Image 1 (tube, rainbow, N blue to C red):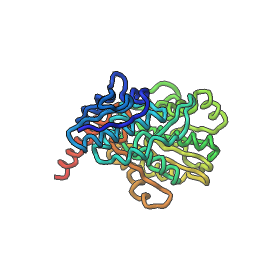
Image 2 (image 1 turned 180 degrees about the vertical axis):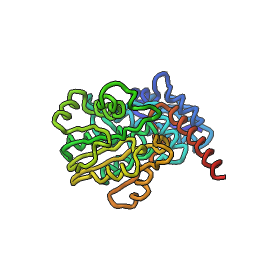
Image 3 (image 1 turned 90 degrees about the horizontal axis):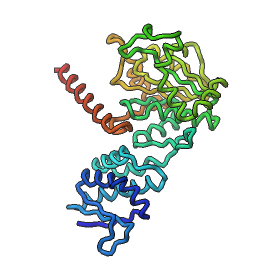
Length: 330
């Protein structure tokens, strides 16, 4: 069976197919079809021919090609991650989700690069932050929890919706000891805060970042420094919240002042607390989830936007953890 789909100009078709037709080959292998952008049966040169054994295969390929065309027309690159994500959605029967994300720009980096959601989960996360006062972003590494929260904070600061950004993390060792690190206290805690610095440098550039810090419009500090404060007109981000105790989480959430917004991010699979301590993140998401103005957004492995192997690594560990839990319950 054959179907001809008009992708657009030859340049658009070339971008969709990728260098050496890499994208087309990936699509062919994943969906069991054959793609050709050569003129056949009177078709125009900018028309793609999809050949498959049944209508379902051809339709899925057409949906993915249409999505990739929109990506190219927006001026974005067709990345390996974007292609594989689109294929996964179509295979799972969630093709309508392809129309719900990607065009929304959160903010621009200092180089002018637009920050956009790359998965449906990221789109929902951004919407939750816009609509709620407190949002818990829960999920595995690589889902953009912290990066997108920082992007939303920078956007709010630029629009003068808040007067400052406050970013914090608990200084909990992941198999290492603070005391063995060289330097003074600030030098010792800086490694824990490095991902927050990196995200801000990407959004603002080093010079602008330093300007905001000198104006006290950006503050990055360990969670312990939050005690006793009231944070008004602020965008507050608590990162690595799985490593907070119940008391620390309560302390953080009660810092929230007027005209402020808080985002709490964490990965329950990476808790570094002693075995006798329960994560404050798990407690908070359980007891606060039904309060108006508080949202809990859970990412999945499908939302991982790092290297494709990261998704497989996360899935393998989750499978091992499930087997371990089943064994413990027997």
